[in-house]
Length: 370
Ligand SMILES: [Zn+2]
Image 1 (cartoon, rainbow, N blue to C red):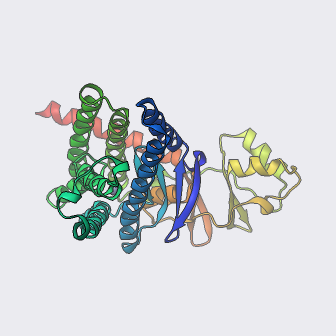
Image 2: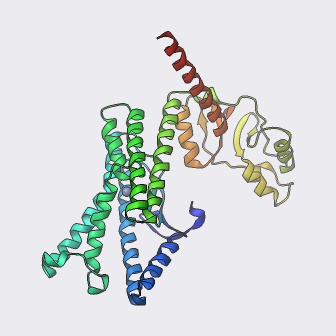
């Protein structure tokens, strides 16, 4: 995602990126002002308003990120898209109360901004002066206040995975199991997404609403699937999905040997072993990159030594999470210092396939007996 984005700064150690499509939004604002014959000054103030609003969105995302940090969850980055912001947390806290607080912290920031703006405007302009109006009539802050109110109301809609939907899931999860809570929240989210899309297409023609609907629909479907996977893998030891027959490299071998090994067999990533002890890992992309500098380099020169290590007693659930966090598709499995296997996302996928097929088979035979 960050590939198509520019880093515009960092707050509290979290990088903030602007997606290139954001330029389309600014362009669209200028075009619509100018097309309405309102001139460059009005257009510039319109664009300035959107930038100020997105400043509030950054603060909203920081609300999520800093609350998550309190529960030990780091945030990879914050990305601003034309349809809003995303704080990419490494995971969601599983404790329902913590998820609830992380979700509510974003809209809470906008409540604070709106209250502060009202507190500034009220003594100066009175209650009448709080009403929104054209930007150029000196109503910039009033409009910003109402936009924050709108952000709060919109985000609190129970459209999982939007904030309100996450809050709904967390509340449901205190009364039923997590998977069921997610399924219900996801169904409500998909239903809301269809309503957004209809509203955006047929009632107020607004392409942004349709984009948001698509984002919510896909997000709800994806998260429901992910939760199901996580629960299927809970309590399953890594040794059940571990590859036991694999080729290991030695640190002194030249990259030529690694390249040959890559072509000879099915294995794309190689653990590196010295005197029976695990010392590093060589992933395919890394090998390909290093080969550009010549095939006489040694494996030891290019292997990754800070790749996460999996202990044989770990569950697949936690392994999956660590793979995602480290962006690794293959990890070594150790018993003490000894390498006993390799776990890959592909193998975990195969295990999932077998497990859900078996679950389907059991369901059928249950019905037969009824
Ligand atoms: Zn939010």
